[in-house]
Image 1 (tube, rainbow, N blue to C red):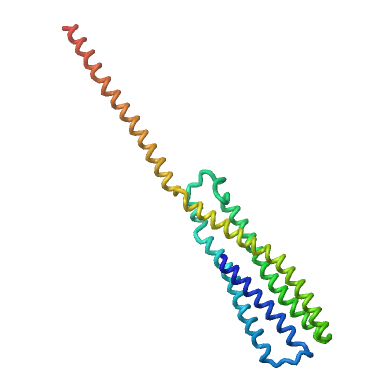
Image 2 (image 1 turned 180 degrees about the vertical axis):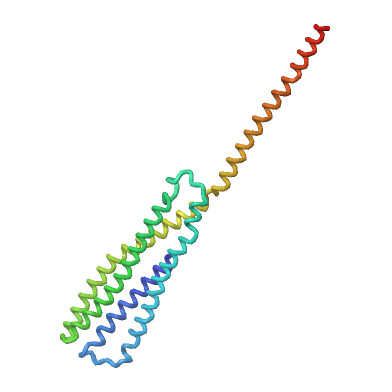
Length: 223
C-alpha cells in the first residue's frame, strides 16, 4: 500500500509541475521552440503513467484483501467479536465504502488541479507575460494547496481502511476453525453417553447376584 501511495504522489507532482511548465511555455510572448517544451511533455507523460499505476495499485490491493474474507469469517469460530479489530463483515463493508469514497476524492482532486491549471492558462493567454506569470503562480498555488488539503485526507483514509481490513483478516486467521470446535463438542457428548450406559450395565450386574441368592433361600425353606 505504501509504495502505491508513493507512486501516486510522485506521479501527481510530476503532472502538476509539467502542466505549470507547459502553461508558461505556451504563452505568446514566450518565444520558445517546440523542443524546449519536450522535457515538460515527457514529464507529463511519465507522471500520468505513474499516477494511473498508483491508482490502479490501490484499487487492486484493496480488492485482494476481500478474496476469501467472507468464507474466512464463516469458517472461523468467533467467540468474542469485540476482541477483533473489526466486529464483523458489516463493519468491514463500511470500511470498504469509506475506501471507495476516499478513492473517488483522490481522483477528483487530481483532475481538479490539472484541469484548473489548464483552464487558467487558456483564459489568460492574451494578458501580458508578467501578469500571466503572477496570476498563474497564485492560482496554481491556491489550487495545489486546496488539493493537498482535500486529497491528503483522502489518502490517509485509504491507508486507514486498508490497515483495518488487513488487521481483521490477520485476527481471523489466528482463530480456530468452527468445524474443529463442533467436532470437539460432539466427542465430549459421546463420551458422556458411554459413561452413563456403562454405569447402568454395572448396576444391573450388581443386582443380578442378589436375585439369585433370594431364589436359593426360598427353595431351601420349601424343602
